[in-house]
Length: 480
Ligand code: HEM
Ligand SMILES: *[C@@H]1O[C@H](CO)[C@@H](O)[C@H](O)[C@H]1NC(C)=O
Ligand SMILES: *[C@@H]1O[C@H](CO)[C@@H](O)[C@H](O)[C@H]1NC(C)=O
Image 1 (spheres, rainbow, N blue to C red):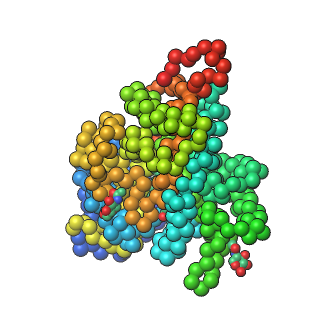
Image 2: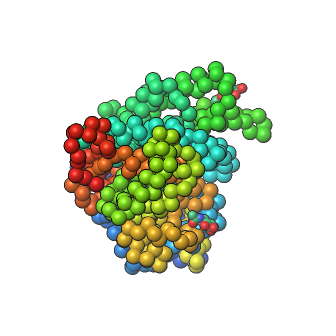
Image 3: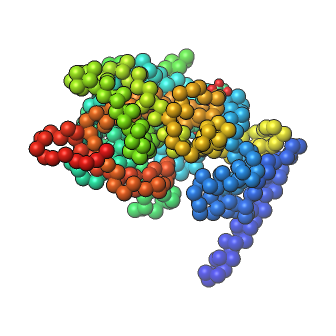
């Protein structure tokens, strides 16, 4: 069969499939109410090309201007409804959460592990979530302060030779180490190294094209994922032999028994550990990168943060005593800078759900099987909720917020259980950064890169120095 015939066959098959899907869809959804406004773009590709050929913020914002807070589109092969109002987000994530299930591409589910909590809803989700939440609760993480401090200081020192540091990529190592700490407590160095090596391979292929071809990034990820299961199996075996009950995440997953005395399976434990690593690392690292950029670009803010942090440092006798939990809970200026960075960068611009049945919202039909996307970023940048939304202005967080207008950590049954440990590590890193280090951004630009979270261009190349320098004769640096 010649290439042309083959191509023709493909076209015919594609067309048949298209017609089939079309008619199926018509059967599934017999709308009484009507679909929201919006353009579905071309058959097959929908508006995917439009989404990927421009800044995604522009894509969503122009449609919101044209159609309002609720509109339909068609991206990545799926018809979807986009929601950009606090009420609509509350409807989907909180009050009618049971009608909308989380949804991820199968290729990604396979890499993380299908039993990870964020792919689930209902009983299994609630069960795992309780354990994850408990192990990341204030009462547990307050004991992590000294260890996070040690990780932060060692990270900052390693950047401080004055070499150009790609900040985001270095911060990923920091947030990985903190995630490992919150999952395993103290983990032996050789296990940590093996986890790091293989997780990095997994991470590299996570956003690449899924294929079974050997040598491709995706396939390498799949192989690394298998090795991670084996390594975690070893760690679990060793932990069981110790018979020592720990309140870290691994401990609570291992010790869990339901009402019938049933424990979790090894795969359920492994998938959820990788899931938490995944949820913790890039999010926190990209947010920290934004904070460093924003406070570098705003010298008044940096000064205010320095004053706040220096007072704490001085009360600890010039950093001779470790930071206390109470001190980390009383850093209002730094905390508002973190909140404003979360709002401005909106690193999780939106999330995905899928309607499990036909749902009506404000007279509009959300058909069964359609994706539903709460657009967090649009809400964070709506002048009705945040005046002059494009200005970086931490003082806006001095007053209370309207419900469901600040969604950096989501809301409802899937809201981020790691938000407090994320904030804690950011506060601790900033404390040491501004007290003991100086830094300058190399080629400050306003470019954004998607990795796939937005980060400043090239991960914010910067130079760091210890301040004051260990040897004062080395001469000063005229930087921030
Ligand atoms: C700045 C850092 C972070 C941001 C902005 C962030 C944001 C979010 C958001 C928006 C969600 C909800 C997604 C949805 O509803 O579809 C979420 C879920 C989650 N996050 Fe975070 N997160 C951060 C850090 C962390 C950390 C450090 C951990 C763990 C140590 C973590 C663990 C999780 C988990 C396990 C879920 C899934 C919860 C569930 O499905 O029940 N996150 N995160
Ligand atoms: C769960 O319990 C069974 C039976 O007691 C045991 O064989 C299995 O190893 C346990 N699984 C885990 C992950 O601890
Ligand atoms: C989450 O939703 C509830 C119910 O609408 C609301 O009270 C709460 O303020 C929301 N949380 C956030 C972070 O907006």
